[in-house]
Image (cartoon, rainbow, N blue to C red; front, side):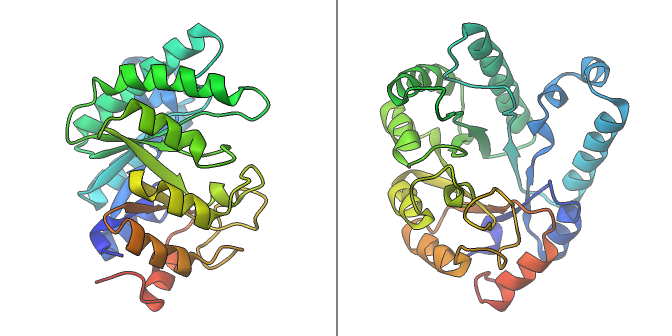
Length: 264
């Protein structure tokens, strides 16, 4: 993997330090908290003072540590295919705010969740409503920004791929979260997710787990063969960017180097 393609999620407290040490990019997760997208005069009224201060300091540290950024947009309580039209409205508002913020920060990739919830949405409904939502939104996404839809509880790749294929825009691609693909929510092995998503793949989230829970464990600590998956990724989608979504980055970055999986 090329060093310029590797990013560290800001959920790890050591992400700024390690990104600066190895000249890596950072995926900004601060904006997963939707209210942080609002102007400061309203944002800080909605958020607890300690949380808003923490988010701002974390963002400042990241911006000072790297010059390459991906933005992870908000997702809590947001569903593009929601049954309630008011939920769709607020989801669209937050997505548009995330697009504006990503452009302002010079990001080329914006990660947003597709939002499927098992036992709540019929797959046919989810597809039809999702296509309607993303076709409208993607018209206002300018180059060079690309929106990447991330899998969370989708049981199989077609849940994302059918949306991306039907919308049929170069501005809408896939963010494959291999850790999520290895949880109990997925009925499809991570290797199959990777093979199927490869033609539409722009970004990858990488972390390990025990095959059941979404642990965001170190790359070397879990049931997935991360080395094999990265070698396959390098063959199928060598230009895809990768973010390590971990609670601590240092050991996993060092492991990538020791395994010969990260180019200088």
